[in-house]
Length: 229
Image 1 (cartoon, one colour):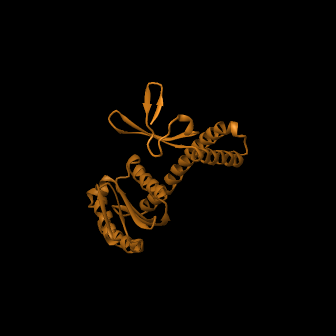
Image 2 (cartoon, one colour):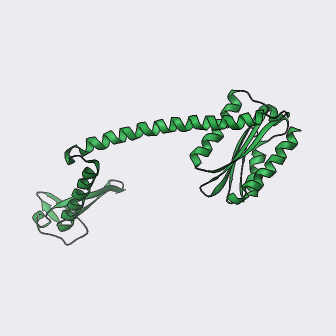
Image 3 (tube, helix red, strand yellow):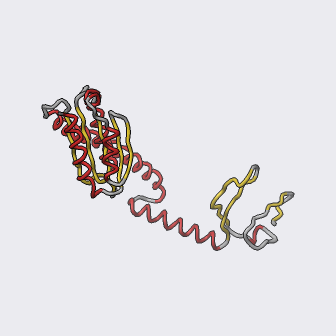
């Protein structure tokens, strides 16, 4: 317990001292609420505080060296890099969306080349990251809706992060002919040791076993061919 005028404060976690000068350097490391009206302050003191300052100083010097700037302008440089990173991420997102739209159109065109009542396509995209797969699935669905491609049904699959992923989109006329995206993805996912579903016009699902993708697509292709006849 340390007396400071008429105020008594207690810093728990060490031996009590008779005067604040005995504590030496102190550095607050955390502050939080532990209950109503009570807050906890965590700190280090003495040699531990000096060691903390030393480590922070080394980290600051290391960052300044990596960015090839003086420590005084390090905050400004970090802010500039953060702004550039944000711009780059936005540009990459735009490029990714454009590429997804182009890729989606390829699958749509393949379906449209059929002369059957239901114009369908089933594609194995190989190995993709989650963002790319979702972008293609969204792109296909958006094109079917925006261009009123009512007779089109497209089913895609890929290995994503070691798992099987499936997605499907279909127009209203294709649905009227018996195509149900939710049922198609469920069938594929079940084959790949998974599950999922969705609406007749759009659905997605996943499976634990990507080795079953080819088998799943064969079943989906047969189902769509039957609806297209």
